[in-house]
Length: 288
Image (cartoon, rainbow, N blue to C red; front, side, top):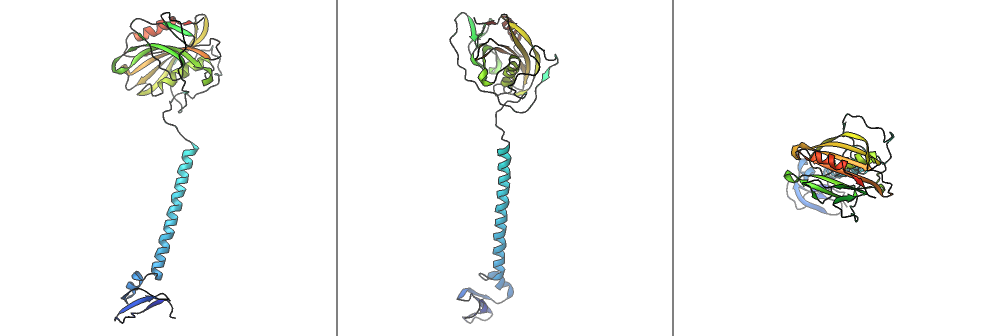
């Protein structure tokens, strides 16, 4: 039997050839010029090389694509970054190396640092005396004139209750007391005071956040007990007046559940709120 190859058209058409695969005629007859034989022959050597090159290219593309996917996947899994994490000073659950009795420098401390996690605490409000004062976390205060009792604002406190005064565009100045639970990593009053402030202003609860400073950080005495007071200023592109002032007072009451916390925020455009923050801080009492 004849070897595979091109042969004169078995039907006798002049100037035409047809491909014999060694067993049978394949395809239709075609003009006998070299270009036609190379491009149209099914299974001809030129086409075989083309198919081989295409197959090799596909393999290389697939291999390269898999390598890129592996690299991207490794880059994601090695250093995941979760959304909606606040930015601020790095969270440190250990007590500060400097004793709490040592005040920080009087110059404002600017915000900064990488994205950090803040605990999300379930606010479980306990039963408290109905004596005209707002109670929470082992601490209480009297509500100033013009403020409405009710509400909670922190995502890191439990047993939190407060009072507020609404301002333009839905913003509000507020006063609140609650507990910073030790189980959530709050282990030192001075550190807790900063954490409560930063976890609020760098979260979604303070929209338009652009930065903050810690302007005051010092010891304070509440109802005869030592505590720590922090005052900070946060700026926002959305808040009336451009920012807000925050107060945080933390007192170790000896409770194994955590420290008592007073915290408050005064919108910059609220002319009298800052004076109320000062008067309420002076009125704080610890529960018997």
